Length: 167
Picture 1 (cartoon, helix red, strand yellow):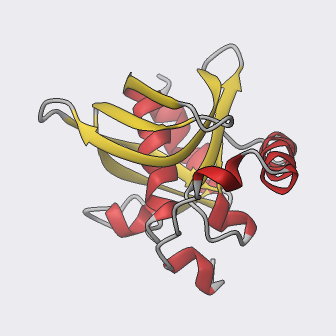
Picture 2 (cartoon, one colour; picture 1 turned 135 degrees about the vertical axis):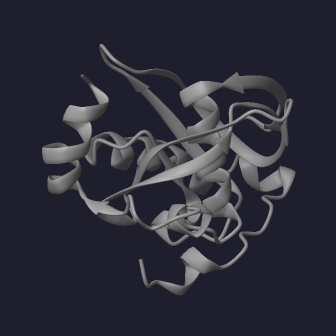
């Protein structure tokens, strides 16, 4: 947080850029960085690239988000259901807060080979996609919070909030 690129709208990737060795290497590096940082998603601006590209994916016992590469996304909420839940961010380390997000979304984009993709996402996967697209628009998760009462350090979240949420 603080780097100006995180507050700027990223530019779309041109179709002829997508297959270049630079962009393909960037995608691979972003997946590696995301996994090394134990993240679930990572957007171009988070690695100081002002391009509309993000990677996401995680597989563990509690959460399953299939690995995806999303380029030049367009997102549309499906229905009007909104849910508030906890979010964190690799660009705002060790901070958590409750953020309202659409429960169901449809996304149209290009994949890592420049092919059009369209998918619906719901629940946690929809939350991750919305969070990453916000990065492409220069928005951080606490910009979406309706109240800062839940804004907390990760240590305090783990101590007080996670135990309440899990029973």
